[in-house]
Image (cartoon, rainbow, N blue to C red; front, side, top):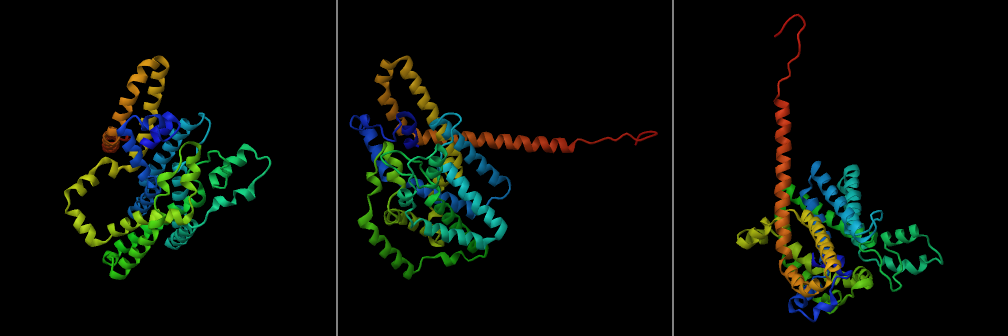
Length: 366
């Protein structure tokens, strides 16, 4: 959330001239760097849970609607009103659409094939094809396609985030994992997800082996370097970091862990948060909110730059400390409004259906 606001307001995820002036901002930036790989976790876990719950009909259309709206808001923020910005919304939209279409047409076997293919894609550095696709002249359309696919050359410039290659594989892999867990749940075989001794040893060996690679994402650069540093790490670096949240996700589906967590009050409270229940709505709203705040501060700078210079740092510190609470409040209110509108529409439809229809009868009345 703060990452996006920094991008909208400063043109850089980090406000470098304030890091040394504010201990609050320094701590927040440090935490953001620790969680620099969180976008990959969100994309994977979101598609896993979508597949696990597998909402049909209107549920899918609501998801696609949120993704499309978020894509539009981001494009308007990052480019001219007629431009399209490729980002996580486009990636999730493309990945979910293709795997759902394959599942509907070919069944669960197609999901498994795409899931395995997606896993393998995450081990391939597709961006290394860029030198072989270089041309002395490339049209804007060709450059845009290279950015979307993920084979554009960095050359000290910014490229599009979340390219199709390899990150569509992350969506397919997550959807496949969710489908497999759903199959076990529907068959009443969740007990098979208990972590046994052999699996625990395997996880321990893997996690220990990744330790020397940890920390690479903490040191990624901002500005025009961010997209290349964040999305073009060597596969072994990516997996060394990603395997840790993958391990925690795996453990969370152990029935014994589920039973223990269900007894914890704080777990239930976190699960009941609007951000937890309506994550993509919260994600969209923080884009809208961040854009609005950035525009307001920019306008303030135009009309009264001296006053903003005095208040900018305290305002940014306040934002750092409260943005999570603001997003939770906005999401809860928006969800309540959506539910109220939906309930009103249902009641209106029922009311209209209950109105008796009187047909004229020739020669008299009934």
